[in-house]
Image 1 (tube, rainbow, N blue to C red):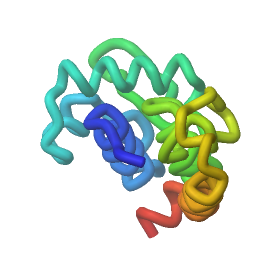
Image 2: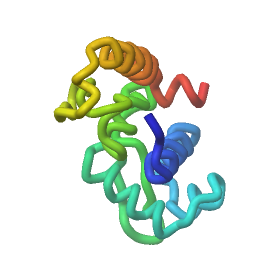
Image 3: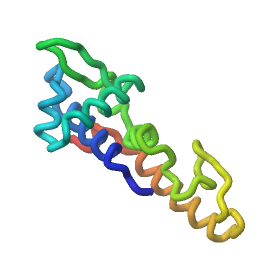
Length: 134
């Protein structure tokens, strides 16, 4: 598994919103400044997160973003899957994004890749935003 810049930025943006969860709406420029993210790219990511139900937004001078769920209800696995797809090292061992791959020819190698997938998925599915900001 390799994270894209998009998924890294999404995680950082959600972490910022979790860190400021009790403060209400947070402007994207504040997130961009605190986390050193390009605002235009961040706005695209926040749009994806909004359409997927992870953040809510309000327009205007008093507007901004906030988490749509509590930090303890959002796992890192679901965010990475949203942004990058499979957590598995190859699609043929992915639970949610299975596709046939050449490595399936070697059952022992496939088994190792499934074990890697299981470890990564379990760790990320058990880790929430609350765990990271606490």
